[in-house]
Length: 195
Image (cartoon, rainbow, N blue to C red; front, top):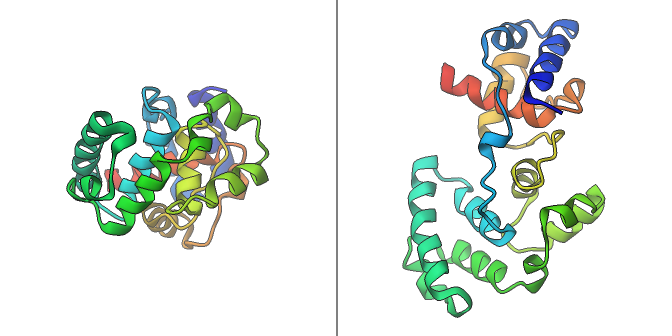
């Protein structure tokens, strides 16, 4: 399943469904790939920590805090404490979510291959019981850790904004674009950087 196949599918679907504005955008858009968003050096724990840091803050702020937190996690590992995490610029709730994730043995044993074998229901159950992980974070894990090509990130502020631009509605969930809704999200985000 290639990025160019996904691009062609989205373009074709936009034309067929008469999503004129999105079709026009797709015609002028370069092919985007999920792979460029994957950091295979991150374990699931680190991926979750980075994603939690990225919730509701600017990309720049998240990047800066993540760099500090990663250094602290590498240095202290199992001896990491709430205070050390808060000293890296995290709020108390986020620091406690991250501490919980770092101490969770079940996450330790989860690989991409093991996650891919779980049903959507089991994935949801596994992740949503973790404090600090909601549907948005689960969606990001499915997109950029498990590399599921058919995830629509409902409730994402950027995507909602792009949906209004292209589909005159922020409640559209992209069902016409299945099985490539992860790619749909990539293009929706990209459209915001273009405007």
